[in-house]
Image (cartoon, rainbow, N blue to C red; front, side):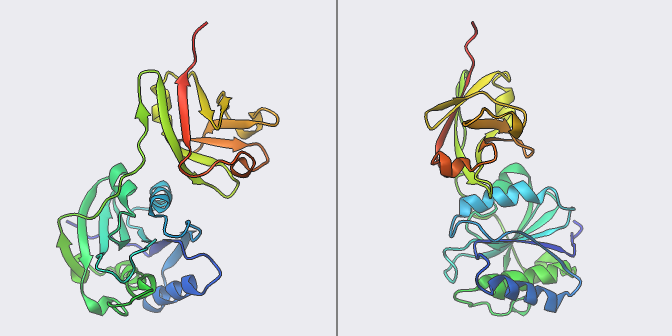
Amino acid sequence: MPEIASSIITLTTDFGYKDPFIAEIKGVILSINRHATIIDLTHDIEPFNVVQATFIVESAYKYFPEGTIHVAVIDPEVGSERRPIIIESSGHLFVGPDNGVFSRVLNAGYAVRYVEITDEKYVLRKDSPTFQGRDIFAPVAAWLSKGIKLLDIGLEIAGVKTINIPAVQRTQAKLVGEVLYIDHFGNAITNITNNDLENMGGDYLVRIKGQELSPVANYAQAPAGGLGSLVNSSGYLEIFYYRGNASTLFDIGIGDSIAVSRKKKL
């Protein structure tokens, strides 16, 4: 099986921007491979929210060239016995803790290999108690970007941890899902997809927070003073407020229930 390699490395963390953590991670990568291209997916994941991170990584990775290396460090158990891992899936490499952070990637694509990081010469410090993003995952990603083989870095393992991803509940006439993510604009992105809605026949009503919404094609078509719903460019049902913050104005949060039902025929 041919090895895949790329000089592109993406970063997803819950570290924020106040501290020097992200700069240190990038410094480690560039010290090993100064030609690496480092892309920040986001560092504003809600602290410790692994489920939110799974959504971000799965949404974004497919838009990068095959061979891209994706580092995700949302790691409440940092320093514990959980394994540091590499996953080869759908032509990409994923580096991070074995805590389910790549669950949606594995659900959406296919896995070729799972590797536990074991060779200490490719890390700064194996027993790093609080910052394995810098000391383990950053240097491993950098060495991978230089073409080091997976099995030089670690041992192949049978599988990795996955977590339960909120599933859409379906009946013949109704879907029940939930809000997965609140974006920068306050839009609420749900786990209901375009495929789910097509199975409803395309003529449906959306209910959330006591409001009933008819879907629109774009933001500007939203009803004045009220919430709107549409399928966004990533294929997810989204709740929004035109030129305003739906999450703040209507108290919509992650985990809130959303229902979609067929319109009754007159």
